[in-house]
Image (cartoon, rainbow, N blue to C red; front, side, top):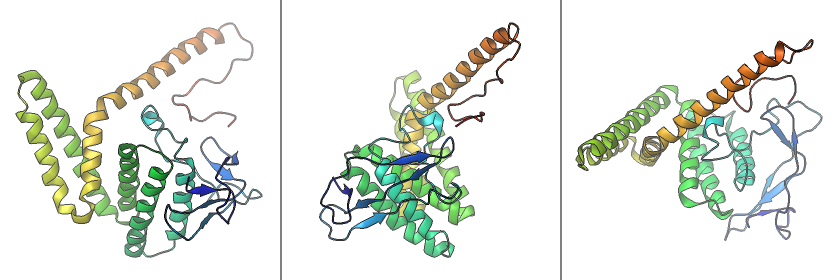
Length: 253
């Protein structure tokens, strides 16, 4: 276990003490410590200031959209690496964009290694690494970030189409051509080719599953709305109307 309760890295991590401040933001109440397997230095993941609000003083743990929670949750074995990575990103906010991008590459790889060391599966760790790496481009190089997103979208849609044609025609050729197209789209990105390739393949393979999950959230919201309308007719103090999603706006956390 690469995370510890003490700065001497003698006591393995047995608990992460979090305070929920908003629907998605948490503050770390007590520091935790990270030492890479085989490394000698210890990194302190500092506690947040609980006397201040969450703005710039909190973590959303793993930044996974709610419609993807069926595949990768925002917390779990990845909680400690996510807290480490959030602190690392905060350290790069004041750096010039080119320097910040380069530094974040280093921190993203540290994040991936920490995920592996906390027993996150290799493919899942690679997917999370690719997601935060793509976010780096959107944060620090807007034009290149948008081009990367466009390339990922094109690759994933091509793979979906190729798989569909292969299933319909009984030939692997369209799917193979789609995979080749992803390789071609990824190559111009040089050292970051794996980001484009990984996310293109992931969205191409899991896109239908994610679409069903998103549709399921809308269906649940529809059922909740119908229930709310029926209950409203018999109540003097009706509840507020439901909103879609597990983290939607409400009167409480």
